[in-house]
Length: 352
Figure (cartoon, rainbow, N blue to C red):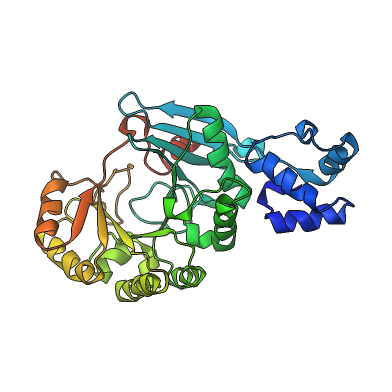
């Protein structure tokens, strides 16, 4: 049956016409699904019982189930492990994704996943430690928002595509999700409140730039030279730093939206004063914002046996960059007591 939550309004109109319905019904159904969040066709009260049955026979309304929910005692961060629909029940954790609700004074933000598992195999990231299972459908990305708002009772003001998976590796589904999210007849979230994080799939960054969606592109850099970055992030062997920064400049020129960068500080790997100087030379011409992240070890190590550990003083690195003219901040650590870093909850569940 057709996954109705993944259909755009235009697609839904065409599908409704195919089953003998009037096209104006599609807008009513779209409202029930994306505004009222109704999960049962029989509760769509402005539709006849006969038409409700037609919908039931031809469409499904997906749901995500909460497999685990952890709430921080320190900062009100909530982490969900959502089981995906129609997956093998004997491998429930592998068929699950993580979603993190972060509460701030000004608004609530939600970090969602775009894939179950990840192919990118970055050395410091727990998301890819147990391999890649599948891409998420647009509905399954939307449902992380809908189910979290339903369960928590709070409204989400912004979204971050920075959970499990590489968003640009699931390009078509992610773009469709963004179009559904911002549809004025549905959730109607401005894409200026959305940030998409990528490890640097340059060809897809260039494709995204052409769409001019208005979202913020956040690029995971994590090193100042190709040798170090390739050791940390295999994607760099395909698209090196020079090529990546060229695409970032192109993205800004095409969209008018400045790119932000993520830099995970790893002790003895990329946190020296020399690294700060190289980083400033790379990013200062772009006028970009840099988000420094004291790495969460996630119990990973490099091929030569060195442990991945956080630096003792991220603030010192930030101050050095600021003095060199780079707008840099240290990311506030949220949910440390509930394993809120990407992939940790899914990984622990798989191990157990």
